[in-house]
Length: 162
Image (tube, rainbow, N blue to C red):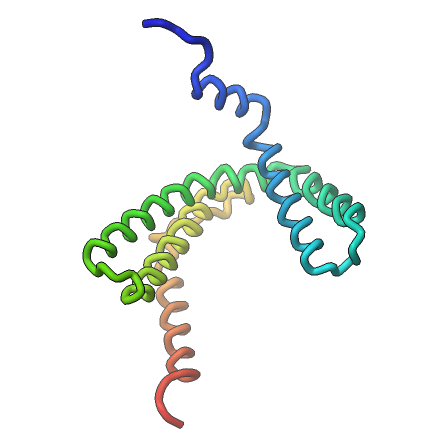
């Protein structure tokens, strides 16, 4: 087998060793979101220098401890799995329904279920929050009660005639 130098795996492992995934990408994400919000809302005026300094400070302060890094390292792999599940659901709904507009509520429901699964699975590994992690299987009665409560409130607000 001929070796051509570095593989993609070597490059990604080097980036991981340099902290690109643990620090640089989370910093850029936080910086971009904060800067975008400050720029869009103009809550502090139009001075982009002030907006950039605030976004820079918040981005660096968020990474001061490893909470953000560990949370991102936990949630984004599950989010990738959730996106794969949504893609499969989209393909299957396209095969069955043909016209996507007729199944938009089903698609929305599947998206909500996947979102809840990703959040609960990520939080179940929240050892970095002081061991407060929990399992979905331990929390399902609370989730079921919350869903029933939301359904009852929905029926009261939007259901029936007065």
